[in-house]
Length: 510
View 1 (cartoon, rainbow, N blue to C red):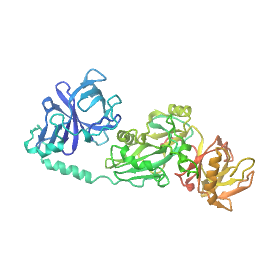
View 2 (view 1 turned 90 degrees about the vertical axis):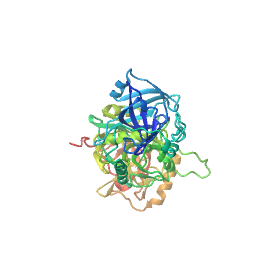
View 3 (view 1 turned 180 degrees about the vertical axis):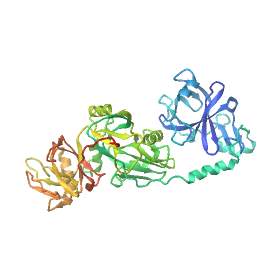
View 4 (view 1 turned 90 degrees about the horizontal axis):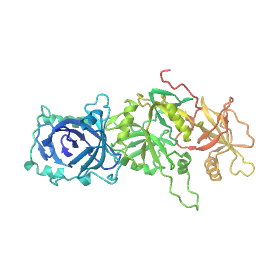
């Protein structure tokens, strides 16, 4: 492997195969951190005698710039018998015995983006005894041949060996460099306040090869704009979430490409990797005076879409392309989890979600662009009936119950708040106190519902500002919830946007 400063810095990875060296240019360099993916562009084969070259390729030649032998050694196939055959198949799994690179690595070919030149591959370290989570390329900068860094070679450029390639860089070598700078200068502007693309509820899972399916994550929807020195994290109602989740200020560590704009869900995951919404909601609650301060539950940002990366606004690109690039730039175990998907088999994934007690699944048209609207190209199928509803009042407690008896909830339609039932279960004593404290400042004298509901105990009305997540068995013919259970408060949705969800047909062409 040679470190090479040409038009831009990169590392050339070369393997001896049948007397020549197939080569890949890795712009961010190799890594010994397992799972960190590197884009590797396949380039032309090189002669064997170039393998030990360290010096300068003069201006006017292809690849003009400085080169050091960053690493060298031997490799063997981990899968297959013929490296040329494995390269032709688009996947090469090898064991490397170098001075710096050791153990199992994978090279896998990717489908190029529309209009993209070249042949993109991914290069990454597999998990084994040689992986090193603290490894950095900056700490491994010296040539294994001379002990020089690339910067030291540049200082001795006049005395360095020269390699003249059999290709010119262009009619005018400097024109290439100007062109690269011009391209960088015309990067797309970063979308700083995008609204999320929303799903439409459908009644049953389905199979369709035009669709991909993901698990539905039970958390707070958030869009993150991640720059080198700044992170913006906003909810679907444009509320700032960084004050509540300050650990997300370190999101730049979780992506190989910066700046990026990503869409995802903030979740607290239990020991089995299942989202726990009530544990997430506990982050909202102030500490009780005199109680021991507990460390807040760790939050994971589960990301499922990429709106901007590598200087490009990707919202018009097909979903599958956006997801492929997103997966390639996520650094594992740094607070971000990539949401995987399956193609076509929605019924099977839905059965798995039911079996594991998850909220449901989301289906998305594989070619869909990203639109900041509620779309029929993105649908949700719920394994459990759930509905966001607005709290418009509460009833007085009876018996041993303290604080209040039940919450009176509803949804908006035509600008009016319609009553959907009372919710009297899902609370413990601590939650009752917490909700009472939030509702007391919102008290009002009159009912906010378009038709005042009849209640078993006296009602107290509140301004319809708080949104609750409610699980229930079904809707009655009268539009009332059966067997409702309080799940938690939503901080990521405005009350006025809460409507009754009605299942529709999933096909966007219907």
